[in-house]
Every structure is written in C-alpha cells, then in structure tokens.
Length: 158
Image 1 (spheres, one colour):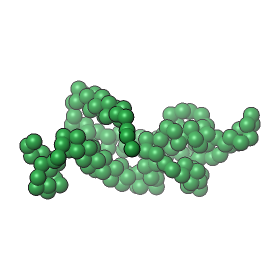
Image 2 (cartoon, rainbow, N blue to C red):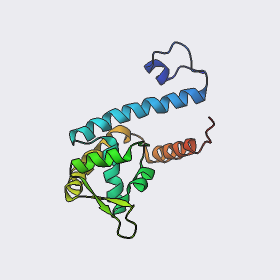
Image 3 (cartoon, rainbow, N blue to C red):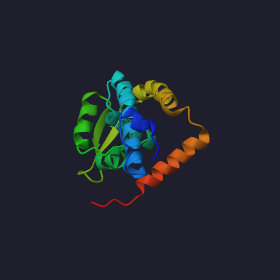
Image 4 (tube, one colour):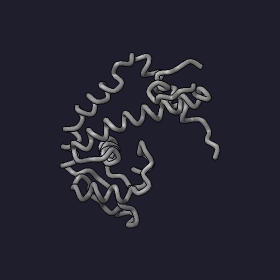
C-alpha cells in the first residue's frame, strides 16, 4: 500500500496493516472532526448533539413520542434517554404527557420554545453541513452515502 493522507495526518511511519484498517480509521478520524464542529455549534445554542437529535426527531414526527421510540431513532445510541429528556424538560424544550389509553406510557412533546429554537438553528446547521462536505459533488455524496450504508450492514461478530 502507498502512503495515504491519513498516514501523514497520524504521523504513522509504516503503512496500515490492511485497507479495512485504513478505512475504519479514516471513518473514525472524519467522525471526530465532524463531531467537534457540530458540538461547538450545538453548544452555542445551549444543546448537546444528543439533545438536538431528540428535538429534531420530535419535530420530524410532528407528534409526541414515547421515550423508547425516541431512543430507537437516535443517530447515536444513548444509554440514558430518561436523563436526556429530563435535561430537555429542565430547559423547557420538551414536556411529558401521560397517555390516556395506557397510563404506563409517557409521551414527550416539543414546546413552543423548542420549535422556535430549532427554527433559529436550521440555517446554521445546514451551513455547517455545506461547509464540512459541500465540496463533494452530488455523485460523490450519493456514493459516499451508499458506501456508508453498506458498511453498516456488515454483520458484526463479537
């Protein structure tokens, strides 16, 4: 294998042991860079990435959802969804409503404050998307999405 940009970035003296190793490390490095930039943006609005994700899920659904349903739709697995909802409720961005049909079910809904906050965030978030990978062509973005989805379909063995 020839030297790669990642090899230089990591100041790695020897080539990667395999293309698979290089690809995984490239994904992790890219994720780290993206996470840093998005975390900084979300923090400027008083949110974490996970909190923003919850708000986007609720806005996208357009109706209150149970906590477990929200958790199942998260981009990143969140082990303590209840604590996450607690913090959003403390910020007055969501409220909880008990289901009339099944009193054990509690649904989470957006507040007007959250709807306004998301509307304010929409353009800065889209701008950051364009700044981070907007230099890729439409065909490259389609192929990148296809490849990432294919990589996630790989069966895992433990």
